[in-house]
Amino acid sequence: TVNPNAEIPRYWTSQGGATGALGAAVSPGIVPGPAGTTIGYFAGGDVYCTPRIGAVSVIGDLLTKYGSMGGAGSALGPPLSPRVAFTAGGVSGFFQEFQAGTMMSSTSTGTFPVLYGPMRDAWGARGGSGGSMGWPTGDPLTVSGGIRQQFQNGVIMVPTGQAAIIVNGGIGRYWASGSNATLLGSPTSAATAFVAGGVSGTLQY
Image (cartoon, rainbow, N blue to C red; front, side):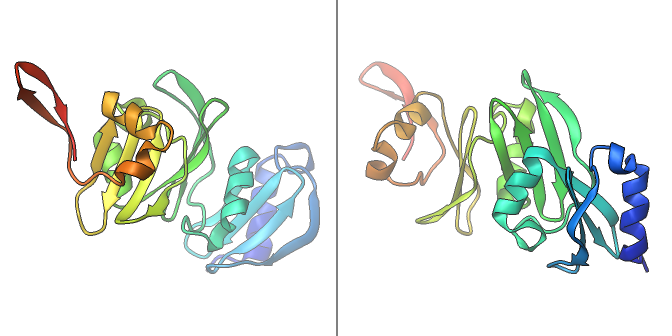
């Protein structure tokens, strides 16, 4: 069993101590946190320790977003590994894995989570941040009929109990502009090729 009162200082030392990225310890020090964590607070970030994973730091914009969501008590749960510098689809930033999802962060796209389950499965099946949908640019939102999330190149909608639906291209741009999403509502089908009156295009309900 990991002793957090010993593991957090050990981890802090391994990261360079007071002269490292985490900086000096600050109040309230090492305290019990949600979801079975113990948290160490430092000037440059927080260290979360769980018996199964040990100590992991969360710093920078990832920590700001994580804290606003509720930290270890949020839908993401405790961190599993430190942040990793990452470049995909022409965008450079960081990603960090948590118990229930991945957090992606860059200066151009912002910092947003993609939660495990149908949403991350659909995004990953299209290449993740380096694929056709790109990096997340919005939080997952609970809407009428399911959950949807904005990415660089479109929206993924996960209707309750159904497979994910992609809204992108010309339809996606139209749907996302002005009040069109409110007027049309959530997508109920995938886009399909369509020919009528001698005109070829795309149809989506």
